[in-house]
Image (cartoon, rainbow, N blue to C red; front, side, top):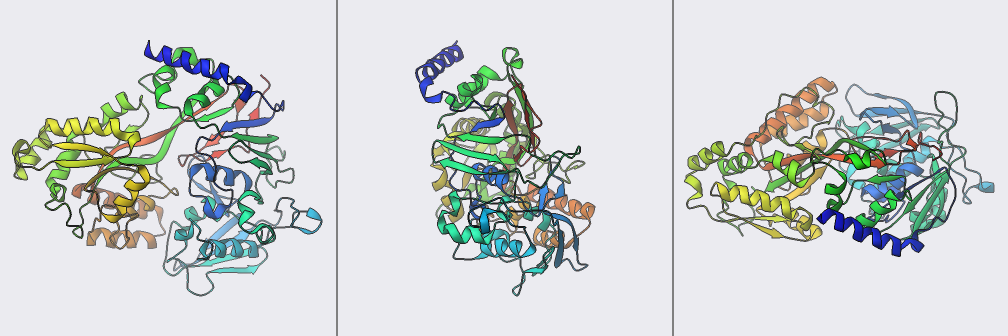
Length: 543
């Protein structure tokens, strides 16, 4: 009954506000979606959020790209080789790729992309004056002299300081999109809203906060198997409505073609507890539910620098292990997530990451008796004598953390939940000012190294928020960066994840999943576990 009242209330809002959402275009082949968080920029050097990454992905290309199975595929580079010592990567480029037409070029006609454009784009990311959010992907890894080299127009080389096997995966990130120097120079700081790349869609106009419009790049270089030039769509229209509830109602009214996720208040209305569409919605929309490389976790500060909360109960490994055993992760998925996600019982690396397909890694299952036994071994039977632990969480996760606190209190671990603004919480995590905190770790690229770097003692926070330090782990981590054979590298990854799990510096709660809703007339939309959507082959059928 409560859900029905909520739905009727929101429907009333939609009717009253309908004048604001009348269709401004009658194009049948424009793909429309809403971006709740807005888009700060379309400059790849600052592609730090998913909303920016999507916009950049539509307009630009990278040397290599990640397909729907998380495999690295050729893009601007048709092939590449790695030197025996792992220090030199040679990329052989396609010779039929042109930048989109732009007034910065002679006669406004887009010129051919060459290796020197890649040198320029990567140096731009590393330039301290740019203050690029992506500088970390190259800093400390590239050779000191001439790290990027244009051998000729169609051959590009990267020279590393030390081997780094996940380099191709890094190069697939939107940060590494190729930009033309002429357009960047013409617009300067305003390049953020005057983008130009080699991708399938090109910039048309942007009324910030209202509408972003991209048109089909009619000179795009890719073709389908039948020889038809991509993309099939005529364009993309992005709106920026601020509420999830209104976004859902606009989708239900067929004002939008696609929706990424759903508001928590609407989940019970639309989804069953198994995370599938309720019968009344099955004929009205499509739902795709896929793996998302995101581990939601609780973290412990186990460093020794901060004496502010000494004695700190979570410094005791057995207490951390007891907390891991005390939490029923399946109940979190069922009752707080509507069946969205997978209980995190296999370590910190999420399911779906390449190399984990046949993993025998064991983490922590729900076992309150084991938790009680560990408390006794730690010298605190039923929590007697154990001081209260504060669990700090952003507001969005307070319900889950209250549930966790309840389960910990049940076995004698007194836990209080404190709510903190997300940005401030991250700052406090970096400073080592929180003993116990709720956070998430989303993969930057499809290699488990991005999760294991979280525990490398030579890294600061971020990423090492827990201050975990183990010499064996560090040796294995460094060895994995030099290992070119995938099977051997994956074995090292599993050993590292297992070692970390035994020390329990984190409590993995669940591995996330993506929900993509589309209208019934949308075909060909592809996505991967990084939640990057591909619209090149989307067809929008007549309703």
